[in-house]
Image 1 (spheres, one colour):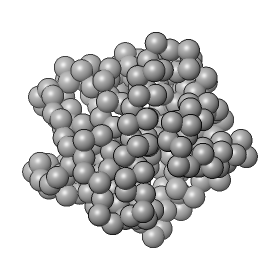
Image 2: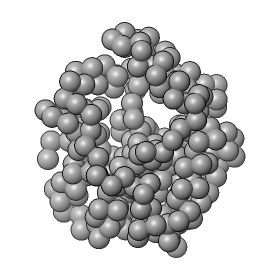
Image 3: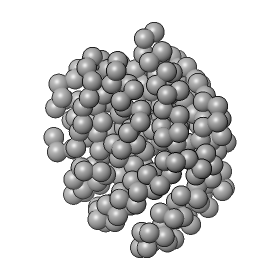
Length: 250
């Protein structure tokens, strides 16, 4: 397996899947807290962080399965942020026997119809191609970043995004990622693992609407963090860790 992986702590395995534009540095503040209780496994998705670029369309679900096999993990808890949450959900629907629990932090959801301001935002960022620096400046104006913008960790997040946007330009010609034929949004009622969904009260309203899509799941709990936006991993790691540890102890 050629993906970059970092492991800290001992005990139950928690595989952490970072956000789009992020890498394992997304977990700089949360991972040490969780490692007091678990073996935390941070992986850079293909083409991100220190992992090699894909030579064809990336298949994140297949990569995750190969990673669990390589680490000889019969089962693991999956913790995903934004698109990492989307990967975790799609994986759990295809390979439920390999998932102990799911922890989803403001997950994205394929085929969810976003509000017009989110669509305009994404279009504006992409129109800045190939000027990576300008793309990142525009990306930092996201309507779901009202809290992190005023955080001391904003520049750190921006540095991570700049690094991974440059990396994306290296392999963008490989084509869009491969996702399951039937997107998760069409069969979330089949989600079997115990699941914790967390989002911030100051996140964009779309995050709450995505949470509502998950209400059909059979074994799901919902939690919110007051005063957090979509980057609650940077701004509220202590509250996150408390919620996650409490859920995994049940």
